[in-house]
Amino acid sequence: NLPTRVKLIDVGPRDGLQNEKTPVPADVKISLVQRLQDAGLQEIEVTSYVSPKWVPQMADNHAVMQGIARRSGVRYSVLTPNLQGYEASVQDRPDEIVVFGAASEAFSQKNINCSIAESIERFAPVVAAARAAGIAVRGAMSCTVGCPYEGEIAPERVAYLAGLMRGIGVQRVDVADTIGVGTPRKVQRAIEAALQHYAIDEVSGHFHDTYGQALVNTLAALELGVWNFQSSVAGLGGCPYAKGATGNVATEDLVYLLHGMGIDTGIDLDKLIDAGVYISDFLGRKSASRVAVAVLNK
Ligand code: HMG
Ligand code: MG
Image (cartoon, rainbow, N blue to C red):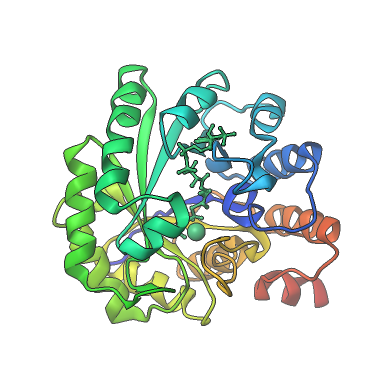
């Protein structure tokens, strides 16, 4: 009873690049977004409006958002941790903003410098303003299975956070395995916790591949009926506040898995691989996508 269609949100330009030490010029990010939409991505997480002192790589948010050639039918989302970020984003007309909280107190403190309860207080006016302006709102939930500071995270804490997100009007949530420690049953428990407050169409999986479990965790999520997933082209990325965590599962690898199972994504794998080659070449490294490497070595 797997879904017949899956929607992928490529978070490469944001989650993928936010942790890069080498500055990536806005033009390269814009070109990456272009290549992703050309490959058929219908949702792209472009940038974040966070402190440039904390995350210097995202300091060019305006230039990137203003520079992309928007295609109708594509949803462009951005991260906004507080009203200051939201207000900065509005002039760039995001289709969706993302508030980002954590199921772990320690991670909330390290990542956004406040407790879970305080984060919800900060998000509430952001969500209200966005919804009044007709902008969609997603909530990212970090550390839903494990935390770099607290270790294993109980599903109850995911349910608690999802309930808080629902309470302030967040329309859909990402169940994130920030440090990629999850295994299928644990990931299913975290998703089921989110499902206490959100419908299956409103829950997405966001799996980092640090321990090589992201694809199998995706399959476990598909078994529950989840059909929205986040991934990064070329497996780019990592979170600056999750030391040692590698990138998201590679979009190419997810597409290969899904198409191989007869699940439609609307994505052209060859064009997607080209997009991954483009950014990997710029960064001077081999793609972290096993599928891209295999196809290119054929
Ligand atoms: P703070 O220091 O607590 O904020 O940071 P503050 O309100 O006390 O302000 C202090 C300074 O920051 C002031 O500047 C503000 O203007 C500025 P100063 O007067 O010192 O020059 N400031 C801002 N500047 C730009 N944009 C803003 C903004 N807000 C305040 N929005 C803050 C709080 C959240 C801003 C900070 O902690 C921050 O930027 N953190 C970075 C968070 C981040 O980007 N993390 C990575 C993304 S999350 C992620 O990757 C996980 C995810 O992928 C899911 C998963 O895998 O788990 C989504
Ligand atoms: Mg992430």
